[in-house]
Image (tube, rainbow, N blue to C red; front, side, top):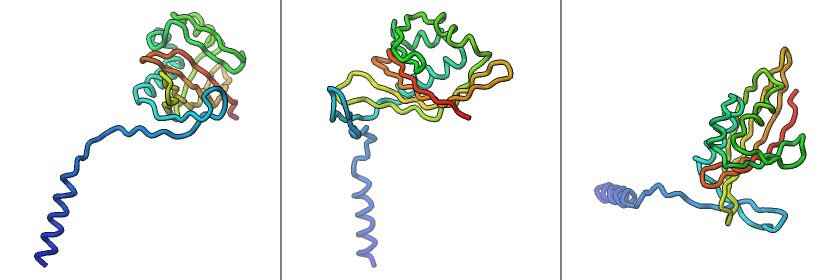
Length: 168
């Protein structure tokens, strides 16, 4: 019995003496399926980039355009589905953003997730932000499902690709 207790005690101390550093593990997954980077893998981006992208999505709904200008580079390439091509939005973008919001009394956004990914070899992160958007206009409500893919380099947003679909 003493040998069993001694064995358990020694095993306990040996298992506790192993270094338990909280190291960040870089794991790649997925792949690019077309274009020049075919076969390239992805890895997770940073929580800071995910938070920056989520904050941008919220700032737009709140009409906080000055905060949005602080988060972005001098020019942001914006792809909105109804236009079908990139629009270069120059900072300060208050007038442009106000014009987009002008048909509505208010906008609410409910974010589901913000997932940062970085393609191996790229110097930027793309955060996929999924959310519902309710646009209020008089007694009417437009309900949308939206996916923004927000590209960030050196802590600044430089591109926003947006997809949306109507909710019933």
